[in-house]
Length: 74
Image (cartoon, rainbow, N blue to C red; front, top):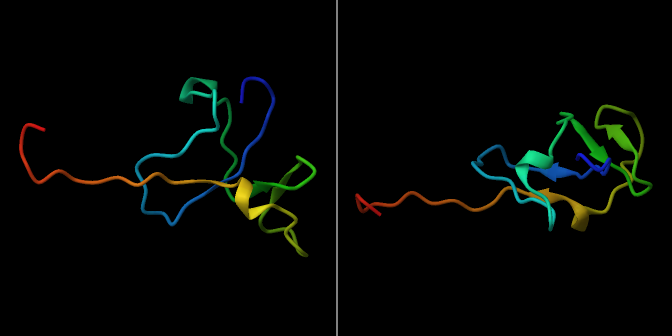
């Protein structure tokens, strides 16, 4: 983010919208690093690194639920 903070995101690859951390907008995003996560110490780590993945599952921002409207004009 513009303020230097990094966040982990996760998806099932069936998504249209991501949840953002509170008080952030998409204009705050300065870089997206694929195949990585933020570990419990705040460091960005590659998913391909061998060994235990040290992260808090509750801190991962997930895709948001979306729907398709069956009624035109709504």
